[in-house]
Image (cartoon, rainbow over all chains, first blue to last red; front, side, top):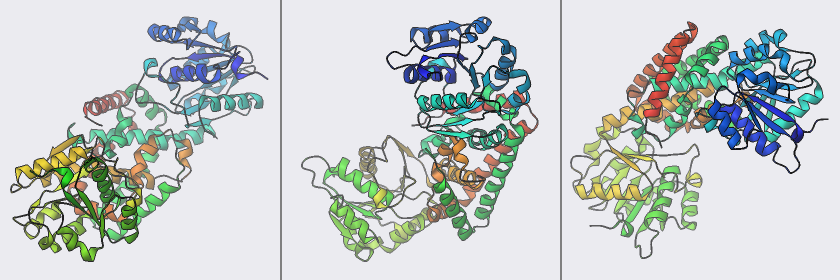
Length: 293
Length: 293
């Protein structure tokens, strides 16, 4: 069986996520004495590649037009592009992957990817879809860090045809990167759950900032508004794509949230103190039961 | 002029906030060599008082029926009760305050307090309303900490009749407790702003937890849901009182938020990618301009 520390890793897209994965692989997987593994990086941004090379995070850099040369060397490929670009890349470069390679992605919505599986899969390459549940309100390689995965969740969506030993090897890699909980789900469940834990939260945070009457109001804040709106420092093109790619699931969660909010508003309007207290006691109890980091 | 380190402080209500203030006064105001000041504590909970005495946070403990004895000794009184109880306490114990004392409160809503000012104020006692913008999702003296005020905001609502030197002395105390920004406002502005930065955020966090389909969903979370709902670990009776005491302001902010959310939902429904990106770019820019801790 392959050893993680001796494998060649290819990172397609050296942005915040790709850069952070490259750093975590370099520091946590290839950091031991005698490790023979390498990290190769591919990006459109030459400056990011040069910085990553100077920092000894990647051993070699590839621009998109030489991506195939990189892929032919890689035992493990992490495609870290936006959702649509991920599907396009996997289809266009299908022939270039090394035979026996493990390939994964980090897309926040999986529906479109799974609709194109027939154009992506190759019998001798193991594509294992996944979603590392970590990120940052900052963007780009310069903001990347190998530490952002510590104690976070990872959602794996193995396919029926994936080889068991490859899934196990991937899980071992995920643990070495710092993640502490791996959840296995199918793509439909993933998109449904993620629409709640991630996309709905970004929608709420954005609407809350939008509803602020001015930017000075935080002088009156005690931390709650800050906590609720940190994720409103949002990457607009990426989240536009994510919201629309998961439109049906997201709209259903927004509707449920709007109903919960309207119920709470009605209790306040009616000055129903006992109803309000009961609602808030139930919320506290429910939140207490939730397992959080 | 009085020196903060030589004053006798009375804390009425040794819960999370009163306990934290007592600890911060003990550690940061009376911590220097030669300080002659004292901290006296009053609470219904005998166990809290005994713990605070054992920890040398308070020099003497008073149950509510001996509150007047405590008040007669205090140069500075912090009333740390729920909003209605604060008004009741200030009215009922009006005669007991030491002549020349500075008295303040920590109520999160000021309308009712200001409606009763005539029954609270005494010409020889300087009542200076205030609101320390700090807290915790935990409750009670056992969870109190003198560190929760560090770098937080404090809202002061001085009255026209307050003596300038007393307001200055209070501001000096606030800075020594660890707060870094003092905002002066009138009660109406306070209640309006706080309904947004604090109460609306608690309403949203509560409705979001309420809308979760189960308590296992956090296995699919990356931190956003956790950040948005930490304040949903809510003290139900306190927040019921705060929501209802500030009903009009809060409902107006809920309505504005519902409109912002509905605008965003409509963009998603219509799959208006450029409109969505423009909305999110505006949110990011607005949030970036906000001064936060």
